[in-house]
Image 1: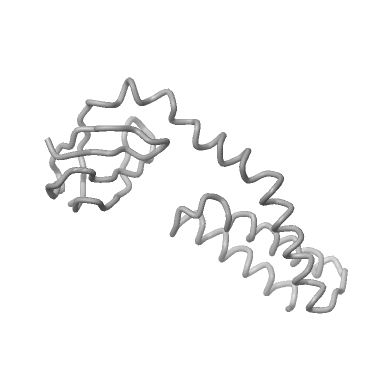
Image 2: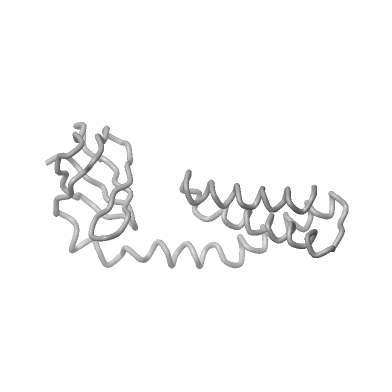
Length: 143
């Protein structure tokens, strides 16, 4: 593949991770690996296609096993101080929330994923009670 195709692949993977799915940093490291292979081509390091894919795979595996667990645990532990202070509080939801579904909302100046763990639909504009906090996910039920 050409260097710019690797760069596009890297940006697409990073974009999917950031905006579309919660892939737990797997796509971030794939995207970074693709971008590095693209940079190698940009700087004139010519590799056959099988070599490009080999470098991509080796870099991705290296990043997965070296950085992913540490980075993921540091980011996930950021919400551990909140359960005692947020559990039991009420939040406003702008959108309707079906049981078992999730939406994104702002609460206390931060973006949170809100999951309805109750049996009832929570109507948009109404309040919900925080049942539990799991990282940056608020588990709520209708009040």
